[in-house]
Image 1: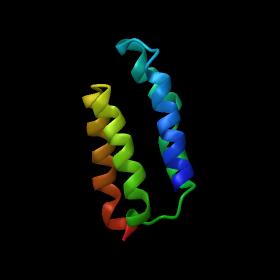
Image 2: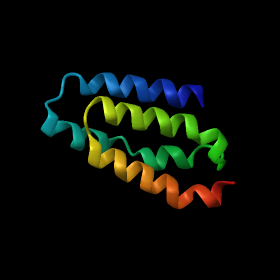
Image 3: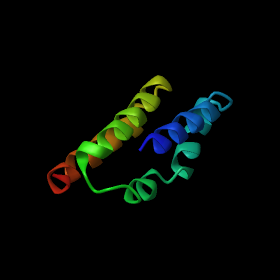
Length: 81
């Protein structure tokens, strides 16, 4: 999980060079859902990566994307335990 988190931070650094209008497209290319499927299906293990993603989205003022992330987490929360 640490490698996943490290990659999220590396990708966040890429957003520094993007305009606000380019950021959403850049984040969509990251395929976060597919990467999350590669991890153990446990909310307890996935939660740190999801929280990091939410922080990245909040830092770059991407509220709509952050909301979608937490809605996905909420829908899957019961399945992961």
